[in-house]
Amino acid sequence: MPEFRFHKSSYSDHENECVEVATNIPGTVAVRDSKDLGGPALTLTPTAWTTFHRAIADGQLERGHPRD
Image (cartoon, rainbow, N blue to C red):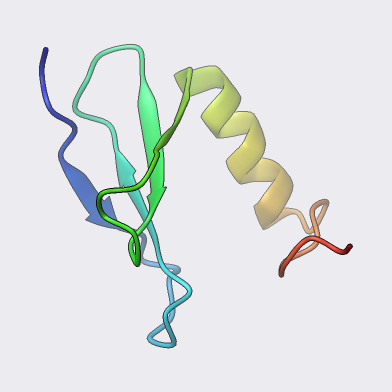
């Protein structure tokens, strides 16, 4: 099974709010928290990733932590 090659998002800041993305596996985009390299990765189709990324860029999703 091929390994994901993650790179840090250019939008990540330097205050530990970092996201890493891997696009080296055809048909899959993987996203993980750079503070937890051994932790889980969210995998999406490229279409789902594009939709998610656009929603963030357009301000449709709130940044920050989920509310209790």
